[in-house]
Each structure stands twice: as C-alpha cells, then as structure tokens.
Image (cartoon, rainbow, N blue to C red; front, side):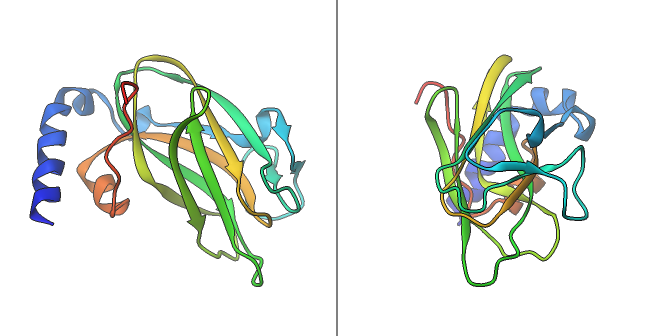
Length: 171
C-alpha cells in the first residue's frame, strides 16, 4: 500500500502543472444519447436522466456507443459515468475502450434504483486532440445517461482505488 501511495504522490507531482491548469470546470460531460448507438435504444421514459434521454442496453449484450471527445490538454483523466442498473436478478457491466480498441477496463456496475454517477476503476492518459471512447455493454439491463472526462487528482485517485495505472498511448 505504501508503494502505491508513493507512486500516487509521484504521479501527481509529475503532472502538477497540468492539474493546476485543470479545474472541475475543465471536465467534459457528454450526453451518451447524442451519438449513434449499435445495439440498445435511445429512450426517455425513466426519471432523473440529463439531456434528451439515455441509452437502454436491455437485451443487447455487446451493444455499444462510440463517443468522440476533444481533449483540451495532455494528461491523466478519470472517467465518470452516470447510469442506472435497477434489475435485481441480473448484473450489468461494461467494457471501456478508446481510439479503436485500446482497452481501458471492464467493470461490473453496482445496483442502483435511480441514475447515479460512479468513477470507472481506471484512469487513462490522453494527449491533446480528438479521441473516441467506446462503451460496450457486456451484459444487459442497464441504462447509460452520460460520460464525463475529469482531470485526475489525488482525491479522485483515492476514489477509484484499487486504481489501475493510467493507460498510456505508448502501451
């Protein structure tokens, strides 16, 4: 654990200049329903979503949405999703990739009775410019409302623990 804490402090020190320029206002919330959905439906029947609606992945294993993002600054980012997973007899999960199949992580989503936000248990290193995030449903019965890229901070790093090291474009 101490080795991880040392790494966290070193990582944050290296990127301190980038983090100083980034604030919570620099995060980018992206409404998932604005993009083409492959497997899944855009709906607006549940309460509590933002934007025009959400993506319902019910009965669509391996359904996905590709979301273009424009990163304004090089750095490490956490990914926060807003979703609902209220089916009691089934589990829901996702696989997250970027830039044509580069793996970020797979994660099982907690059960929720309303739309909730959670950080994905990984961080990714993005260079400035255009990228594509791909959210793939690895099981059915969940709703995706939005995705937010948030500059990685020590506080967020603690929230996504056990954190994975940032995924590098050079990996």
